[in-house]
Structures are given as C-alpha cells and as structure tokens.
Image (cartoon, rainbow, N blue to C red; front, side, top):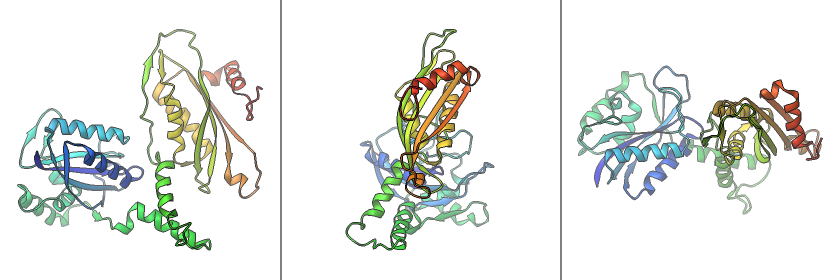
Length: 357
C-alpha cells in the first residue's frame, strides 16, 4: 500500500463543510484507501480574477493500493456524486479534490501531474499539508520553507475554530433562539433539538448555492414536425420562504415540447423540482428556476410551468388566511406564442383544487 499520498480538498459553494465532510467519509469508506491523517479546516481567499466566496480547504494524508490513475478516477467519482460544478477555470465549485503529492514520486500522464504543478504557489494547499506530514516526508523541508516564507504573498489562510464551523454555529444559534422565545434549551424535550435542526437544514437546503441541476440523463427519439407535449403534473414539493424562513408547499405541473428529438427521463423531473425547491427562495423563483433549468438542459421548443402552493407565512401569521393557495405560471417559446397550446396545458391540470376548467 503506497503511503504518504496527499490530497487537497476545497469547497466554496453551498454548505462547504458538509461537502468536505461527505468527501472525507467517501474516501474513508473505500477499502483501497486508508486515511492516515486529516488537517484542520482553513478558510482561504480564492485565486484568479473570479469574484467568488471564500473557500474552505483541508488536506488528507492517505495510504492506498490504487495506482495514481485509479485514484484519480475515484476522486472524480466522488466529486461527481457531490454535485461538483465548475463552469469556468478557477471558478467556484461545490467540491475540488486534487492529488498533490505521491510520496517522493514524480508522475506525468495525460490527465495527472504530481507533484501538482500549482502546489508550491498555493498556501491553501501547503498550510494544511504541513499539518498531515512529518519531518520524514520527502518534501517536508521544501514545504515548510515555502509556508514560513509566505508572509509577503497575497493569500489569506485562516484556521477555522471548532466554534466557528457550521454545525456548531447552527446548533448554538438554535439554542439562543429557544432561550430568546422564553424556553429552556436544556429541558428534556429540547436538549436534542439543535442537532435535529442542524441535520434537517442539510436536507431541506441541500441545493443552497448550487446553480445548475446535474442529475439528469437525456434521450433521443425520432424527430417529427408535430412533436407532442410531454407533461407531468401534481409533482409535490416543499420549500422555505426567504422572507420568514417558513415553509411553503404544493404541486408543480410541467410540460415541454421537445426539439430535435431530445427528451429527459421522466424520473428526473421530480428530482429537478426537488433541486430548485431545496433552498431558501420564493414561489416565483421556483417557477422561474424550473423554466430556466429545462431550457438550459433541453433547449426545447417551449416550456410551461404552473406552481400551486400554500404558504405558512400567510396561514400561520399576518393575515392568517387558511387554505388559501397561490398559483404562479410561466410559459416560454411555443407555449407563449400559441394560445391553444396554453389552454390545452391549463385545462389538463384544472384549477387549484384539481377540477377541470
């Protein structure tokens, strides 16, 4: 088993620590990999000229039976499973994993260069790496000298204290909220509530900060001049309003007219609905995002989306109008140009109570 392989991990989209911890978990569960040591988390300034959020970076020292090429394949699989997105070079991403050092080996293939060609230009790589190696590591002196001499370089790398990590911040904030409303966070019914809220937020805000839906597969059908409407209705969704952080929920109805015979797997439409709704937002934004994503993925002749929803900020507070429903509608392309097509779509759905119009 090859020892002292150094991986550098970084994230600056969504819940950064969540993605990094998930990646660490997947790496550690692989029977071909043994995690020797993990560095602390560091918040670091991004490089390049792309305006973006601060990164969180860390390093892993691993042993592995994989060849460098097989480990690279594994790394790419983990990145893909955690919704890695990066539309531009040096741009933001949910997860980035690099093979930085492979003991004292020099590797150069079509897809992999080790040591990583930018390693000694990146304090956010070297500072965490220094934590997970000792003086016996072949490049230890060179790495330490680079870190010690970085005071004049224009990169900020700050250790994230345990109390500043997202899990602790959310749990602490929930405790403060419970106290602020006059309850006791240490009473039996509430003592585990901060952790429950933390775990719930990971689920209901799982798309936070991620721009594009990636979990889909396209298919080709015979192209015809009279392509038929493809529709799925009554797709349930749940989301959180960004104004009051209260739930809104309901049904989504989607239709599109394929172009060039390109269609999307039907099971992916409910997943797309989950993707756009698992973040803080508004009903109007859910509607718009569904249209934007379908146009980006399919480039169809037209898209139609209707969202019917109930809002707890309307029913539970303020005007307190129970059973009220809000409908948002958006049409693009051929749906926007042909009234009869819009009518067909709307009539097939019915009113907000499901009755045919």
